[in-house]
Length: 183
Image 1 (cartoon, one colour):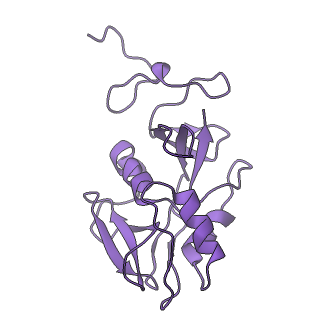
Image 2 (cartoon, one colour):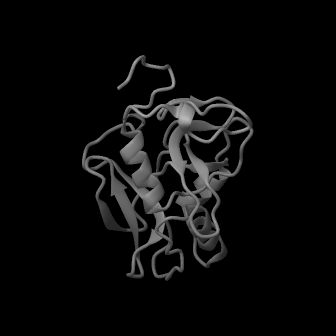
């Protein structure tokens, strides 16, 4: 039973005071700007594999509509959960990847460690903070960093209903940089 609402309540009713602290501070509510961290609190991600527990920080706005990459080039960026690894893989491969480049070149609040999110990371944004994305119309699709199993396609996500699709890489779609804030 909730006795009093706190300013740190999240949209789904979970109090942020029970979440891991970062530098001794309580994280802001989901969907709120995290002062000094380059964007909006997208929620906690528990440790998985070699990636330690962290919060996802989404840039406050999209970087525009940008093609994902070159046609005719197969990619090994295939992690469903690790956009940072996928982005590094894309940038080391042949061909061009304008969406990944836009993310790594993005800076906010002095942070320059942004990357193109993996499907699970973008999905977490849709689940936790859909209100921070401009539109929920079907054409409002975002690139992910995970390459589809066919040569000229990459996974995209729509914020209308959280669906993943394959889309041809040379088509301009929305790009939202993300970074990690480790606990």
